[in-house]
Length: 144
Image (cartoon, rainbow, N blue to C red; front, side, top):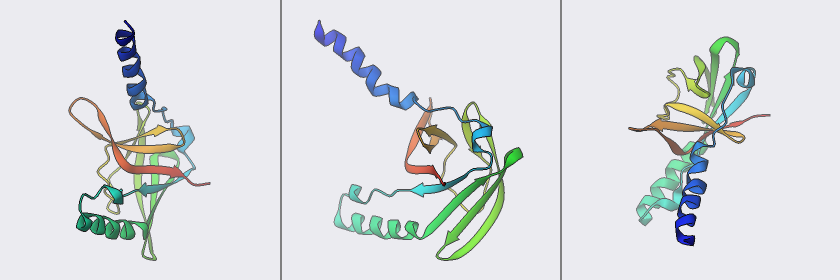
């Protein structure tokens, strides 16, 4: 009997974080700045060559800073600093069913369909056949 009660409890505990995103609103994003973070899991390389390649890519990513400045009326300023070369580009943003949707941008392409908040961070998600998959290591963190 204990085994029958334990399985449904474990299923609830294990699946809850996938649905624990907080809804975003336009009011809480307007006038704020967020930094794009891309964490590359270097330790996941299976061979020494893969780990070396991942370290090299991670080192390059560390030299790229991307900041989003959310303005009113769906205006977005994307600021980039790539090896000291600073630039900015206008784009758009909107909220759809509590998720952030970013307009097309020539500066960055992280293959994220929508962004959903979980705690203090906003994580990137990709559409799969029946739902959404969180992109590992891709998120926005607020700047003070």
